[in-house]
Length: 283
Image 1: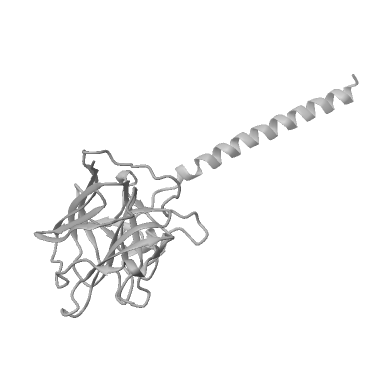
Image 2: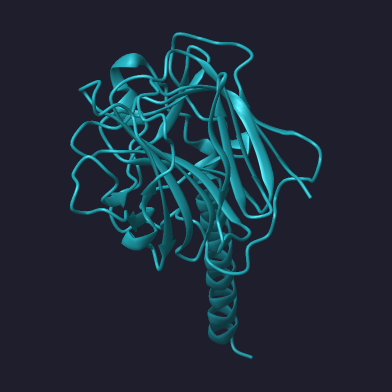
């Protein structure tokens, strides 16, 4: 082999090794890029900016379709939220909390003809922790997935005082489930009615919509113990000492997501505050 040929072979080998080394270094750098990014500092002034939802076109965090699997144990309480070190500074919801903030979660309420009630819902808001409470960012629709379960008991200390709308959804899977909504009106005559409706294909069924709490003048005051239970396709709800619902039938109920949310209708969303939350599956 001539000297010229040998030089060309050495040159090509060196070029190949150099390119391979560049590719390895580039891959390592891109893999560590996210780890090198500092965590955002959250203060009162930049809370909304720090908690902005993903930009349009980003992947949705709505409940995943497919066969639902129960993700809480039977009999044992699973603590989903309690802040042991309350701080006046707002902070992001811990990633290990077992709660999922739902962005771009959409469905339609059963009464589009009434602007005070659930209409075209589209979750945009984040949730954060401040002064020992779990809170949604104000002014926008919000949704938080608590668990996937069938029969269950849910307990906690919640504060749903003030004007606005909020809801609890259960048995939600692939557009089907039940939603219990509550709106506090300005006038005492209108009170704070609770309505229940079934969803199919992400759409509330108008014929299934009805007021389920006779005491529509019930007014939430400050922090209250909450106990929600579903057993054998029957719903019960107790707030403080008031048994608001007792064995309300849910004929088409099945395993699915339990979701809490706030919605903007005629008024801004309910300024819901959750101080503690635990859940367990029951037989």
